[in-house]
Amino acid sequence: MDTIETIMRRRSIRRYKPGEISQVDLDKILESGRQAPSAANRQPWHFVVVRDQELKRKVAAACSGQNWLADAYIILAGIGSPGASRGSTGHPWYEVDVSIAMQNMILAATSLGYGTCWIGAFDEAQVKTLLKVPEEMRVVALTPIGVPDASPDARPRKDFNQVFSAEQYGQPMNV
Image (cartoon, helix red, strand yellow):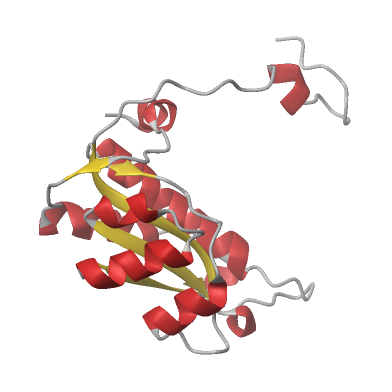
């Protein structure tokens, strides 16, 4: 599947059936994240792959009780290092950098036929405790990755000219 097709086919999957991700596929997914761009190439990230069923249940509970997360083969936690990501402007880019890497992995998983769902609703302190994340690090996002047991339709999107402008904010693209 090509890149554009992968982007168009990606959906948030909230139901998973039993099934493994081959180590070859998992390595491809994870390597896709490692290859992501980051501000000044600082790579201020770390990712925890959670396979243990009991730990997945606890992480799912810490994600606002989204217990279905534990049905996926893994839960992937994206963790950023605020101290390693401040550029010349002083802006902490770690959240953007981790998000780009997570998106790479989500798209790689989609292209290989797996389901994912961006998770931003979680109790960071609980997740950090469960995954033994160092205090100075921040949990940015999580995603389950597994064999989908759903094929949801695309959700509605805003009109093109509500999202894009030509030359100045609010100027229609005339597409």
